[in-house]
Amino acid sequence: MVEVSRHDIIIVGGGAAGLRAAIAAAEADPSASIALVSKVYPMRSHTVSAEGGAAGVAREDDNLEMHGQDTVKGSDFLGDQDVIQYFVEQAPKELALLENWGCPWSRNEDGSVATRAFGGMTVKRTWYAADKVGFHMLHTLFQHSMRFENIVRYDEYFVSKLLVEDGSCRGVAALDIRTGEMSAILGRAVILATGGAGKCFPFTTNGMIKTGDGMALAYRAGVPLKDMEFVQYHPTGLPGTGILITEATRGEGGHLKNSQGERFLVEYDYGVGQKAELGPRDMISRAIIREIEAGRGVSGSYGEHAHLDLTHLGEEKIMARLPMVRELCKIYVGVDPVSEPIPVRPVVHYMMGGVDTDIDAATTLPGLYAAGEVACVSLNGANRLGSNSLTECLVFGTKAGEKALEYARGAPAGSDDALRAQAEEESARIDALRGRKKGGEKIAAIRHEMNAAMEEGCGVFRHQDTMGAAVNTLVQLKGRVSDLRLEDDSKVFNTEVIAALELHNMLDVAESVAVSAHHRKESRGAHTCRDFEHRDDQNYLYHTLCYHDPSGPRLDKKEVTLGTWEPVERKY
Ligand SMILES: Cc1cc2nc3c(=O)[nH]c(=O)nc-3n(C[C@H](O)[C@H](O)[C@H](O)COP(=O)(O)OP(=O)(O)OC[C@H]3O[C@@H](n4cnc5c(N)ncnc54)[C@H](O)[C@@H]3O)c2cc1C
Image 1 (tube, rainbow, N blue to C red):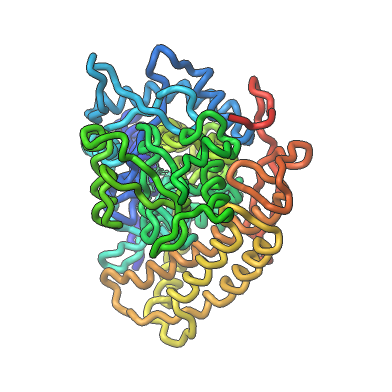
Image 2: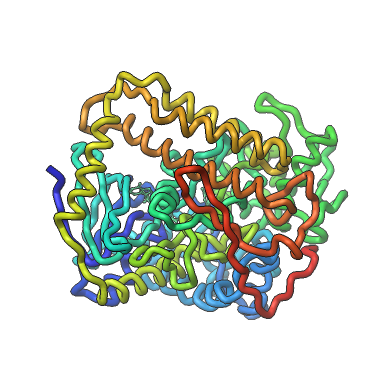
């Protein structure tokens, strides 16, 4: 029997965006009941692993106009300028608020908040807490959320379906991972804050849990996914593991070098101009691949890579600003950055695309909102600037909490029986999957083939034919996934069934990425197509919308909101 519980708002996700939304709603109305549902304990959300920092204007030599302009240019003019304007205005307030709640931002000698340089930003505007920013931000938010008795947590519940009645979203079907029992968690509005989908790719900085669940949930409920072709490769991942070496290493003065010991970003430019190591991520990732293609890569047991040299920074600075980087390098590649260069290569890091929302975090499905990495509010366009994402979680998490609450006040609750019936149907689907021994396909095999197709088709450099091949492979894999074989038929902590549900989600998300990428016949931001090397504003200055359709993804367009900053050639 499916258990039914009722709240005013349901938030799916306990990372920075979900917690910030919960706090905003709980503060705005202490009488509202807010459910916070998360498939892992909130402190295990991917936000915890962020290292480098969160952007917001803080210094006298900086202003909102400059932060806006950097973001628009970074986005290769695909970011919506009304959203960017709102974001830069709210950013400093949100970061200061976090300080009031206890976030230990690093300080300058005079006691003011310290800021560091980040790629594509004209001045130092990235707030940090050494190189453990995500940990401190998430801890602060989690701790603060506990002050509100009206936030009710459902830890280790896996949401597998949105419950929709009369064209409005009124709850979620969630599997209690501990017991294997299904719950119908009902409310008048739902916020998705489920993070990104890096696990569609084999080599990624993303944690195991980043399987695009929220994107797939919204997509299957009829909400389009926007700008999915734009996948960010971070230039500096540790070969072999995908562990991120934060951009703060370059912000603090680190150099990228090839096998000849040359600072190639300076020697050959590659579009990053005088910014060199502080250029944007898309350009630096391409430059590293080009160095390798030109035979100037460094060879090693993990394949070809580049070197990130911090040796000139000295031990004292490394220990003060980048202690975790040193620890990670020592443990995972046996390199001490105080005395040796770090091996690095581009690694899948972040999804610019996601659930299509407007500036109020609302989706096209009444009652459904989205914020954080799962959403595409169109702040990041075709390429996100490092350190804008954590701030985005705060700014649009707040917005989602407030707007969902406003909506919930006027919305009908819906019928318990009808919504419970939907959750019961979902429960039966999962029961049939659990211990399904008649199937012939293994989860790991399909995941492996999906990963390979995505790396081949949707890498740093793309080709029409390999993108087309990725689309075909994904169609086949989606057919094969209905014949999965599962060994574990127990209900308690059945991680195999969760892996199967996540695989379904990743396949939908991966397909939307490949189909959207194959369609965009130009190069813009992170989408670099070797058959069409230039940006084509005449024909492609629009957002791609990808709709779920039983016969295959259907594409549409959405206008980009322009403003003060006219699209020009993107040069640094
Ligand atoms: C290694 C690393 C370093 C980074 N460093 C920086 C940085 O320095 N600066 C910066 O700006 N950005 C950085 N980023 C990006 C940034 O950290 C993320 O984009 C951001 O933290 C995402 O937060 P979120 O709240 O959207 O999602 P997450 O923190 O990913 O949280 C997602 C939540 O959703 C829940 N969830 C997901 N699916 C389900 C489901 N089916 N049912 C129930 N719950 C579900 C999860 O349990 C989790 O609580 C980094 C990213 C990585 C991977």
